[in-house]
Structure formats: C-alpha cells, structure tokens
Image (cartoon, rainbow over all chains, first blue to last red; front, side, top):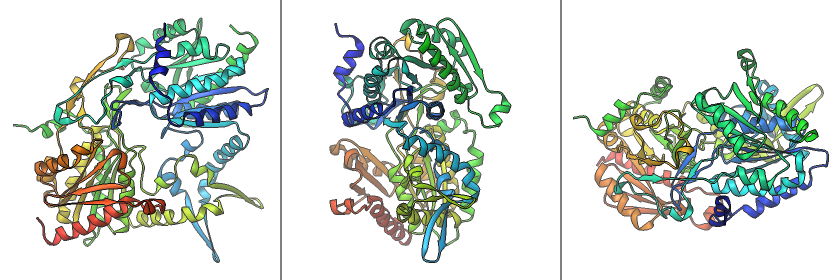
Length: 310
Length: 310
C-alpha cells in the first residue's frame, strides 16, 4: 500500500526549477570538507494555492526571523548551511538591511570626473561586520540559499536536500524552522480559475498535509540529528504537543514557542528532559538574539549525540 | 440603516498605528504645493487572518510590481505620490535591488587606517540613476510610503488617505492597484487560537468584503479621478467584468489584465471606450516597463478630465 507521504509526491509533480535546485544542493554538499558539520535550515511559511491559476492562497504567518538568524549563527559555529526559505522572507545577512534602509545608507560622491556610490560614514560600522561575514561565508562556499513559495515546492526541496544529507550520517543536523501548513487543497480538487465573488462567499475545504517528519526521520536521514519546531498561541497545549510529536516521530528535539513570546523564550523539549532559554530584558536591549543561544545549545547537543548516539 | 461598508468600520477597530499613519498622510498632503497633482497608489495583497492570534491567513497573489513601478513613473510626471503597500511587497526604487543582490554590490575598501564600504565600479551605472531619483523624490517630500498587512489595516488607511485627498478635488488621482481580497472572516466569527490539526481538516467559511469603491467614488473623493484594477485568469470574463464595475461604481477607468500576460498587456476600460496597451517583445527586451505607458496615458486622461470633468 502506498503511504500518504508517497501519495503526495505521486500526485504533485516536480516544480519547474526542481532539477536545477537539486543540482545546486548536490554540488554544494560535494564541496563540504570531511570534518565540517552540515545543517539544513528551513525557514518561512508555505503557501497553499486555492486555484490552479493562483490568485489566492492560504499562508502561514512567518517572517523567517528564526531561520535566517539561526543560519548566521550556525555559520559562525563552522557549519555548512543549506538555507531553504520562502521567497521574500528574511535571508541571512540581508535581513539586517530592509527596504529603503539600504538606499538611505548610500551617498553619491564626485571626485573630478569620477562618480562613485559609497556607504555613508556613520553606517559603515553597522554594515561592515555583516558584509564581512557574508562575503566570508559566500567565498568559502559554506552557505547555499534556495527559495520556495508553495507547500509542494517546499516538500520537494526538503526531500531533495535529505537525499544529499543522508550521506553525512550523524554530521548532519536538520533545523526545520519553516512554518509548514498542516492543511492544503490537493491538486485534483482545486478549481482552475479565480473564484468569482458573484458566486457568493466560498467555503474552502482543506485536507491534512501528510506528516513528512515520519519518513524524514525513519527513512531519509535516519542518522541525522533532527530538530522540529512547534508554534502555538495557547500555552496550555505547548509542551504536551511537543512531547506528542517526539513520541510519534522519534526525532531528537522539539523547539516549542508561543507566538507572542517567541523572540525571548523557547523551550527545548527532548525525549526525557526539557530546558528553557529566556532572554533577559538587558540582553534584549543589548541586541542579543535568542537564536544565538538556541544554536549554541544545539551545537553542543549535536556533538554529544555524535559521540553517544541515542 | 447602516450600510455594509459603515458596518465594517464599526466592527473592526482602528489598527494600533492608525493615528500615527493618519498624521503622516495629513502632514504630507499639507506640504504639497498648490499646482502639483497628487496620486494615491495602493499596492500588494491584503492578508485575511483566520485566527485572532494569527498563525494562518488567506492572501492574494501580488508582488507589488504594478504599484511600485507605477509610483516611480508618477513621480517622474511630477505627481506627489502616497504609496500604500503591503509590508514586504515591492517598494518604489528599492525594488531594483532585491535580497543578496544588494550585499553582492558592495566592496570593502581600505585606505591607510580608513575602512570604507563602496558600491563596486561595475554596479555604479545601475545604482546611480535609481539612487538619484530616490533621493530627489525624498528630499522634495514628493513620496510617502505607508505599509499595511491585513485587509482591515488596508481599509482604514484607504479611508484616511481619502479624507485628506478630498480637499484636492480633481487634482487627485486614485490608482487602486492593491489586490484587495473579495472575502474575509468577520472579526466576531474568528477563532481565538490556532486551529488544531488533531481536530481534523477544517472548513473555512468566508464572507464577502463590502465594496469600498462605492463610498470612495460617491462620498469620500467625489471629484477625484478614480482608477481601479481587475485581474482575472479567464480572458472571457475580463472586459465584461470591467464594464460591470464601471457601471456599478461610476468611476473613471478599470485597468483590466490577465494573470499570465499582465506584464505586457493591459486594457484600459472607460465608460464608453477602451484602449489596449501592449509591449512589443523588442520593448520588453529593452527593459521598458508597461507601467511607464499606463502612467503616461493616465496623466493625459487626468489632465483632460480636469478641463472637462464628466
């Protein structure tokens, strides 16, 4: 019998840029040196099209802050990073300069006949460290960024990345921070054209997305250290849902967080223990990001796991 | 009896930053000189929250290309521009430099003890004209950008802008390019917490959003030149729906376009005539944007309307 997750890949054809992206992932992985650890960071929300000619879609709230910040800290900890992110969500390094901020930092300078464009003096101290880290990661070939938009594109990329990561065994860490939709409309139940408002207000019937964590943990990357995320709005459900996921999928950790406090508090839930990471208000004022602490703990756990896999 | 549009503003409270944004719009309008025309450009899609503690929402496909490009061309035609856009959708000028492109353009330069960050020589020719136009618009106070996320935030901003624009009479043009949702879940019918997948796949019942074009044309800015947009995926419906909207709302023009051809073909539908704008493949290769042609026609129509209002 075909399982639900297999059924998904059978009924949803590969995205147009799938082969190209798969090649990028393969090439990237081949160039990671033998002593370096590797992490797959997924980030941002997945779009669920409501029509084949998509005008409308259901989306998940996610700016990509957690994923893009974490990717930077994994690079600092000498990981090779595959960053799979929702198009237009935050990207590592770039996230520090949004929209008009970038143009506002630039000045035109004329010296004789030569016109140049320079970053204003008072912005250099904020741009320089980020730019230096970005260039260093890029030149060393330690960062690969690939974008998706729809749920289906995300799930195809996830499997392609896992196929490459499998060969890294326990050197691979999966940090699944993307806000993946629980619900979708299967391809064969979607209308072709834009829904018309003259037809009255529609009712949208969603179906459950197969839980890909199950084949991922058991079949795709059985030796990797897999971390998933749980976002809730109701504190009462948080830890029990995280424990439920661990019991069901048998992975290593669930990072549990509440929508309104997620920037300064997370709970790392493991099969037998849990630990909380909280930023103090002094730390927040000093611009410390909670992702730096999450990644520091994870790197230790990952190293420990490699010595004593459980 | 309260109309549906009034009911919306009664049941959806003002967004947190409403007063601040209203003040920005007022201040901007007060500084527009007496001979200058003014345009409100709306851009990007509106998010429809599915939960009060919003994790999921329904969205409209729109990168904001039409609106952000048009805003630049209106500035070139000496309009003052209020640009109301979906957060993270494209912004005028900034749209030319996305994501990593920006960091890739920068170089670190060391001269003695002084470290500076400069735009690479081979990027100056593409950055300089955009930067010059951006700085000029900003310094002259001709461009105001304000962002929204949800449908409700958009509708509150739209009305606030119209309240200011009314005093401009026929000098005001409204270019309503935002992809506003036809459907939503009223605040009082929304669940508080994130929907749980354990409860099975949900059915989402949407309601029709009141058509704000009606009070906008008739009550809010009765003397302005109002242009709305119609995006369809089915060519057969396009012109009839555009004509239907003009007959119903009595505004001046509907710009009709098909999802897959919208970058090189639009139809300007007016009460008694219509005209098509098509980019040739040579024009597209030369980097000409269809918005430059749309805006050129609109500016003429607006001027003509001011002499002979109909």
